[in-house]
Amino acid sequence: MDKKASFNLWYAIAAIVAILLLQYFWLSAKSVEQLAYSEFLTQLDANNVEEVVVTETQVRGTLR
Image (tube, rainbow, N blue to C red; front, side):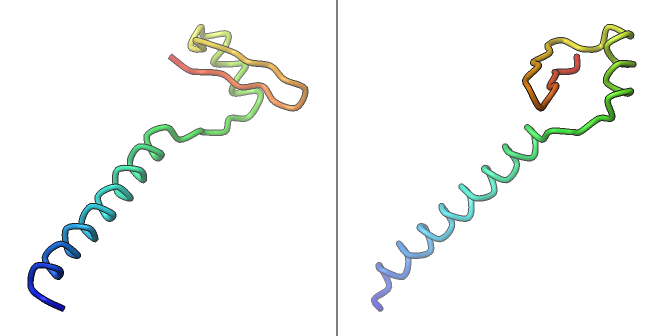
């Protein structure tokens, strides 16, 4: 492999690693924490819940 192709290959590998790291940190920042329903009700009573979505099988909310 010539020097120029090797140089470009390392840039491609570095770009792929950078994209994977950005994806990892972005997804971990948007992580979902499960709460017990009693804890959810406690947070709701304390007015710490910004938004609630109720479906047939789930109750999802966003804490402030």
